[in-house]
Image (cartoon, rainbow, N blue to C red; front, side, top):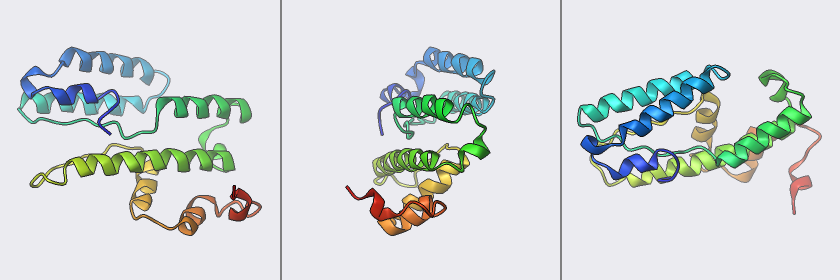
Length: 168
């Protein structure tokens, strides 16, 4: 969507982008990278965006992730319930897959909105930066699968939980 941390940049021409705000983001990402090394990939993205702006390419930025509050809630509960278990262990938990489905649904909706914003442009270039797991799942969800296909894709690995158990 057009909201989130990147939306402020879309209001400006290339020559007037608030580069100091980008520099603040990069500084925060470098601090975060001490604990989460994958944040350095975001630093590279922002540095490249600055370069493109300097070249006159009006890169538009859209936050496609789920709301921060949702991600923070999941992390705090995961750390409580799974006692800081590493990623492979957590992936075996049903709770993780529910969270992942909800997050991927937000991501996919936001990708659709961003793509729709460019449907009228001639030969647009759209780059979407996601972790591979979210990209794989978003590609699946972009096909508009049935409820049955979604259940199978996300939850089939949990034979003790049936779709009818989830009916409201």
